[in-house]
Each structure stands twice: as C-alpha cells, then as structure tokens.
Length: 338
Image (cartoon, rainbow, N blue to C red; front, side, top):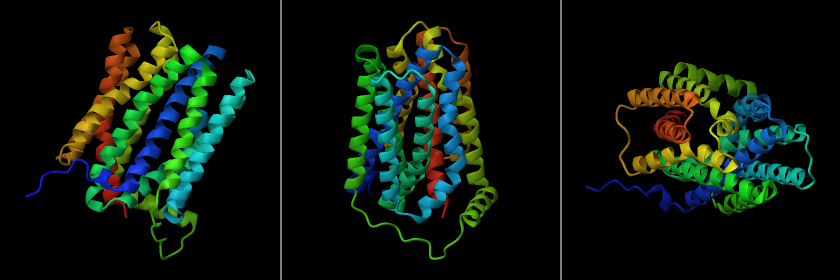
C-alpha cells in the first residue's frame, strides 16, 4: 500500500513552470492593488474613488467571463495565458509611466485597470484549464491545493512588498518591481512545453456554447450550489477593496496596508499547505457551507473592529476559511465539468 504523495503534481515539470508563472503574476497583481489603492486614496481622499477601482476591473471581468471561458475551451490555453499576461505587463508599464511623469488625474488609472480586467478575464480560465491539462486526472485535487497555496504565498509577499516599497521607495519603485515580476511570469509561460488539448469535434457558436454551459450549471445541483456559495463569499469579501480607508482608521500607512492586505493570504497559505499534505476532504458539502459562513462572519467582525491587531487576526481567519472553500470548489469544478 502506497502513502499519499503530497508533491505528486509538482513532479510534473510543465506544472512547475505554470506554478512559477502563476506565483509571479500574483505577486505582481497583489502588489499593484496595494500601490494603486493607496496612490488613488492619497490623491483623492474619496472612498468612492476606491470603489471605482474595483468597478473598473470587475466590469470587463463580469461582462466577458463567459465568453472568455468559451475561448479557453477552443483556443490554445498557453497562448491565451501568454497574451493575457503580456497585456497585464503593458498595464503595469502604463501605471509606472503615469507615476514617473506625475499624471495626477485618476481616469487614466481607471482606464488601465479596465484594460487589465479584460486581460485577467481571459487569463484566469485559461490558466485553470491549462492546470488540469498538465496533470493526470487523479492529481487534480493535489494540483488545486498547490496552485491555491502558491497563490496565497504570492498574495502574502505581493501586498507586503508593495506596501513596503511604496512606503520606503515610492510608487515608481513599486511599479517597477511589478513589471519585473510580470516579465518573469511571461518567460515561465513561454517555457511550458505541452501539446495543446484537442479542440471539440463539433464547432458551436458562442451563444450556443454559453447556453450549454449555463444549462449544465443549472442542471447540476453540486456545481450550482458551489457557485452560489462562491457568489455570497465574494459579496461578503468586497469590503477589502476599501482597505486603504481601514488602514487610515487603524492609524497606519502604506506599510500597514500591505500587511492587512496580506493577512488573508497568510491564513490561506497555512491551511493550503496543511490540506496539500492531507487526503481529499470528506463531507465536502457540509465543510464548504461552514467555511463560507465562517468567512462572512470574519469579514463582518473586521468591519466593526478598531484595533489593528484584532483586524489583522480577523483577516487572517477569513483567509483560513476561504482557502477550505477554494480547494473544495476548485476540485468539484475540475472533476465534474466535462
């Protein structure tokens, strides 16, 4: 009888390269979120301006998410990830140039964030599908755990680095580091050597493909329940977009903002590493529901906290709960969907 191999998916060289690309792009994106948020709030002192940052990225993501999934099913996923990440690099370069040339208007920032949202809309489903392509089916759960843990590790380092760089070296230095990490991600994706999965034998229109996908989700109670819970979790978690305001209320600067932003990822990383060393979770449905409820409770408690350290602990706990649901939902989606 063989034991559980915690590192099975990491023994696949192409998956390791994908993990490198995923990790470095996440570091860049998370650092950029901190820098953009603090920069815009410093310039405007307006909570609405912070909300518009999230809206600028969410609008294209919501509008074309289904179409992007359709494209990921029919186009080389490595090529999509490469093109999308290159677009994110161009967005970071634009933010760097705005800072260097002291452009104080915020609408160019919103425009760049909007365009980066388009790139992320295509990159996210492509990377998820490519991950499942690179490892055998029996390693899906292990691969999801390691990909989630990589994301969380990068999401700890990224905000902390972004906040520290902003505080001690200024926004231009922070954006330069973001560009460097995006460039590494592009190289790692280009390094993947993998034959693309065969295209579907029957060509269908975009509209028909979307109808098939929506019908599948609606008719599969497990997938529908998982996605519905995910929507509620995102609704509760939206408060973190206002973290620059909370950082001010808690008496800290960009460095403290970076720590607050990294706190959920710290909790998620610890739980992710633990789960990667464990067999698949039993009673996944009940565990998923409890973890989402705990996540929402932590975010609500954070909203009324006036202690920096209590806020830090609550955000860390929210990350621990979220990581459990991320693993379960990711495994369910990759296992059940055709």
